[in-house]
Amino acid sequence: MPIKLKLATAAALLALTLSGCSDRTAGLPDFTELVEKNAPAVVNISTTVKEGSAGQSGGQSFAPFPDGSSLGDLFKHFFGMPDQDDGEGEGEGSLGSGFILDREGYILTNQHVIADADQIVVRLPDRRELLATIVGQDPSSDIALLKVDAGDLPTVKVGNADKLRVGEWVLAIGTPFGFDHSVTAGIVSAKGRGIPNDSNQTYVPFIQSDVAINPGNSGGPLLNMRGEVVGINAQIYTESGGYMGLSFAIPINMAMDVVSQIKKHGHVSRGFLGVQVQDVDRDLAEAFGLDRPVGALVVEVLAESPAERGGMLPGDVVLEVNGKALSDANSLPMHVGQIMPGEEVRVTVARDRTFITLKFKLAETPDSARAPLLMDEDSQALPARAPSHPSGHAPLPRRG
Image (cartoon, rainbow, N blue to C red; front, side, top):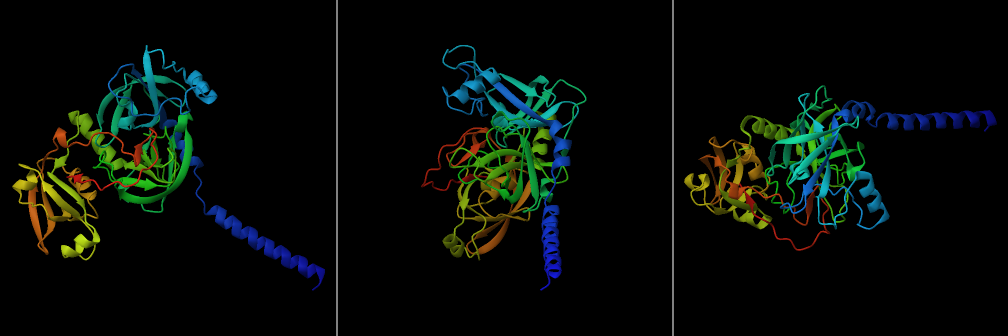
């Protein structure tokens, strides 16, 4: 083959290769405009807790390094942290993220970021530091609404988490380990996810993603490619204490419902059915005449509850609530908790290999049935660290 022909062929192949690379590169998302538009509305939240206060703040310590280490000493100096062995003054604080909802100064974050805080300081991207007050908080959903006294603030645009699709690109902005406005991206891995053996946010249908989230990201926004907030980064599932590819965010629709109730009533109300449930396995599904393991098996009906008054029995398998199918036991409190007390619900159950529909008027969730905000060993509320994942956990019944 003549040399000129060889060169022409090589050039053509190179052009095709470069064209293919260019096409692939062009297909990747560009986050720059999205970040530039939303980063100004993302804030750093730090708290202090007085020595001797009951409980510890649920946020991440300012210093994510061991005491006595050079990096730990550097972080203490940088953040102005007092030594903790003098037994006086303010205790160790927490560090998290949040975002500005409107120009009135309302800020949304996780409840565990500000839990037990005596003072909350919000640092804006322009380095201004403002004292924040707690408007309201809801441990059951891990949502807290704060307010700062400032005007003309940048704000985020609230989206619709229901429109999220699995596989869609999402992006997080936050303060992992104190590094302000760190940006990470990934895809939606699943929706409506319950976290195994986590009795804390049983009402939350988490958005699972593979966005890199670490201690300090808690309370920061999860954004779609339209620049809308679709979730609040809240938890990771880890065996190492750090990111392992499993991140969980609270859907913004649920968070905004909590915000609305806090503003109107000062607290959050949820419907209560009054049952303890567990998952249906393959053997149980066959015994109940189901073609696959779905729904929530009722293991206990609480006395004088709506469930008892409406005729639900232990051994019933709840399959639908107001026409919405339940995939597992986690789904029941998620569905019931989104319905206001006093409303009537239609529940389809499997009983004695037949299907029946029951009607219930939901009650208010009693304080004794509200899930406490205590992380179990398998999952963690960010920015707290989780120990290694132990083996042999038994399934826990879910409340509904």
